[in-house]
Image (cartoon, rainbow, N blue to C red; front, side, top):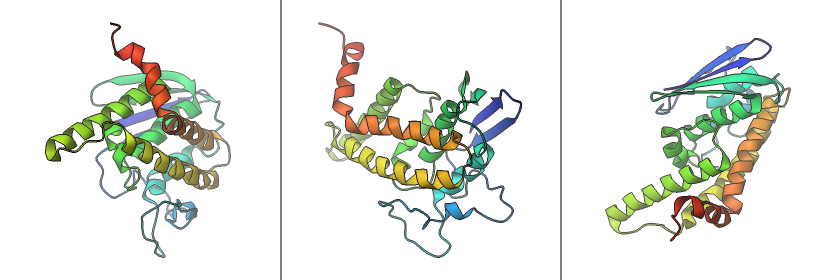
Length: 226
């Protein structure tokens, strides 16, 4: 269980507990009238979504995020906030703008949702690092992917150590993120939710579009000089 607490400068406190190993049900659904219309699977369904449509089908990621987005729907992205993140191993504390803290929380929830395309991100969620920089995200993403390939290689002698699969997966993530933005717009009056996802999209696309170039920038920090 990972707990996020947002204490806004103007007073309100919002707290969310995320079970990274949850199965099926959303993080929380506080809507007495049932899920919002924008959580319908057919509402701006991602163009690469493999889930079958039906009259009452819901996007699992939208259901997970519904309660969080409701709380921040009227919040401005640059409003100051203190964010405390409590994990089983340690506690993180950061004074930042709302969109920075919200980006971290949204990323965690999306990575642990039941979406088939987001499911490969579960390894990152198990070793969640709030407020990650681009460099930290790159190290963790590539490191966990290579560990998966190592275990695959042990199992059947096959492993993608050229990162072809990682690049393809991030291209799929880019489609999901952009489509999901339309859902978030429907759930928001102000810009905190939209901008938080916007920065999340930017990071994902940077990994996808320039993976090899960014890896080169890390080489001097990881490989000792001869």
